[in-house]
Length: 101
Image (cartoon, rainbow, N blue to C red; front, side):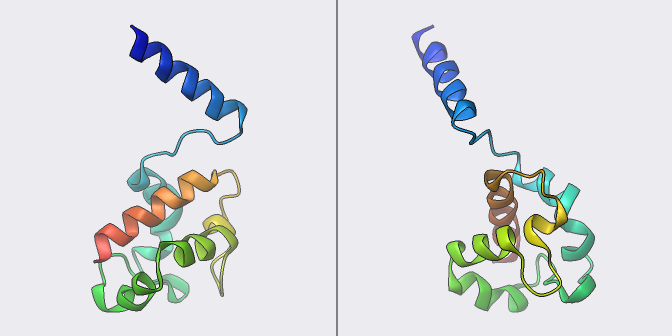
């Protein structure tokens, strides 16, 4: 009971702070990223292409988070879905990295 109360209070504090909850990275990817990153549209690196992702992964997660959050080249900020939280975008990046190592 005490652990549940702590979890609820922590969740409420995160929502009040505007952080929200990170969606499942795969779900965010499927809804907002796959249109380009599954097909290579507009020069997007295809998820799972280890050679294409090697250098970006080597640059580090923070660099990839920044690109995903702010956009780069043909990719708009947050993949064009401004309603995504930063945590959602980061979860999608984490998913794409995991699939592309």
